[in-house]
Amino acid sequence: MSNTNQNFSSFWCINKTNSMKRFFLLVSFVVAMQSATAQKIFSVNYQNQADIKVFVVDYVNQADLKVFKVDYSNQAQGNKGLWFFVEYSNQADKTIFFVDYQNQSDLKIFFVDYPNQAGWLNTSKKQLLY
Image (cartoon, rainbow, N blue to C red; front, top):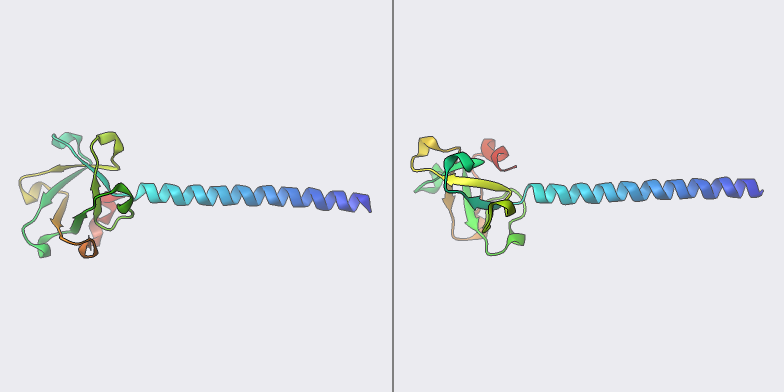
């Protein structure tokens, strides 16, 4: 009987350890995905330093992405057009350079007045900010 109890307690410890490993892995994955899609942006001075070249359009219907500038970094979650501009490039998830002409850009943006207006108009460009 004691051998059966030993086997059961050994089995329970192994499963408990595996469950904890799986839970930790899942939590790590979720945190990594959140930080990977955060929109913390740094504007660089030179085109060759940028991940993405951006042009600001005059009209919303010309844009690939409608952008709202948020006040705090924790508001810039997900790839939804909510951007937080950081002070240093090492804090940014993406670096951008504002180009002078639309044909030089990778992404065309339009700045909106309210956060609920932000979002993608051209979803084929969405991968640029992942």
